[in-house]
Length: 149
Image (tube, rainbow, N blue to C red; front, top):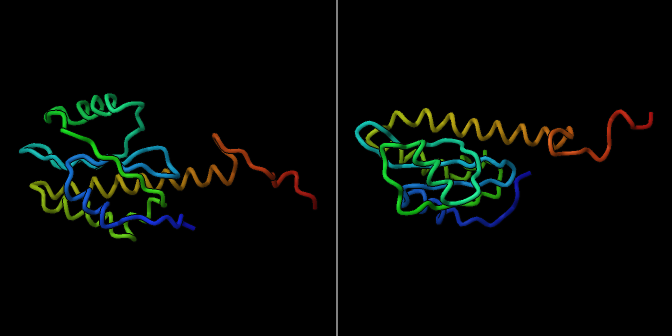
């Protein structure tokens, strides 16, 4: 079951349409989704799963490494998504990303963006499995091995 947070989907869609760089943070997975809509003659938009950083300066440094042919952006906007990653599609938010890429000079970058979303969904599912099984940072409260017959 997904969290029943009241999200201003129109505001999130507007943010995706209006800003060059958007970082999406998620509740169930630590990785972020980087949406970098800047383009030039060589590079199209970049949609990629990235690790969290400790500071804004570190994020700018990360962007310089990922996008060396671009200057630093004026700002980076962060959007918190308190629902499952799959709901980006069902709420229509992912459609805004798709439309923005399709209107760009490099619409073929959509395939990479779709793979990034798939990777994020996979990471979230792994996190959920670990939570149920008690792996990694999770511990189970009841073990099937200690259950009474």
